[in-house]
Image (cartoon, rainbow, N blue to C red):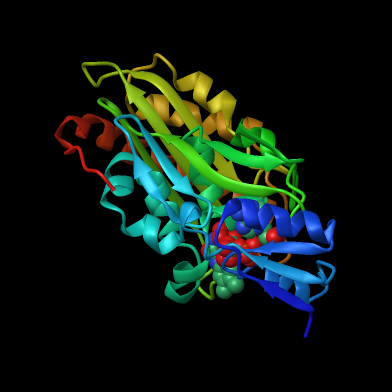
Length: 301
Ligand SMILES: Cc1cc2nc3c(=O)[nH]c(=O)nc-3n(C[C@H](O)[C@H](O)[C@H](O)COP(=O)(O)OP(=O)(O)OC[C@H]3O[C@@H](n4cnc5c(N)ncnc54)[C@H](O)[C@@H]3O)c2cc1C
């Protein structure tokens, strides 16, 4: 065995106490789709114990009030992709989670694990970043809400110490009138985990639906952490929604975003080409959803 003890706490409190008792020698596990490979291939030191958080009911809740969606860290990609509420009011998240791995991976892999693994190309993470999500965490024993972007420190590194801290849930603003979002990615057909490039956009249009009032875009990987394309957002704010605004956004993206060559996925030259492809897919789709948002029924999870 790669570890000595396996615990299945049923409350957050119990999980935190177990983590405390191992003083950093245990590790949180959810679906295990990242962690077990990391342990097996020696990327992560084999822990003395695994603290399996999948029996904690509170971490499986997917609920909403009028304006905000709460997604427990233990909710799987499959549950998110299936949720009518997420599909209609946080569409890019449903789309991002809906393409993670294959059905077997999506049925066990969690949004919390996707974020905690802290890779700048992770699909759920890209969508959450465009939606300006916040994360509820227990860091050094202190429960707090943090903007998602403040959680990341580098590829595979976040503020979370996986032997001591816990990610509890996400708070995601739901799309309202004149708002819409979309996600798309370019993936190798043989399906190496993580895309060549992925992107998500959220837009709010003015009441006439003719102008961008506000925009958020996340393209990844183009930096060490999931990053908003702020220059692209800036160039679109207040502009007429038309092809020339879209092409200006593409030009600014190509000037300001700098993907790297990856020996497993693609060259930086190819990834640059794909930035344009992704933006031309996600912005029009987000706009179209924003224009039809009035017709989206209020659904509860
Ligand atoms: C075949 C395959 C295909 C994949 N395809 C994709 C893909 O297309 N897109 C993509 O984005 N990813 C992909 N992945 C990666 C992986 O499935 C996702 O990142 C998934 O969301 C990880 O979730 P998990 O629950 O399995 O995390 P785990 O493996 O259980 O945990 C991952 C890390 O997060 C920590 N952790 C988990 N939950 C918490 C928590 N609540 N609090 C604190 N720390 C926590 C763990 O300690 C570990 O360090 C793929 C993986 C495989 C094996």
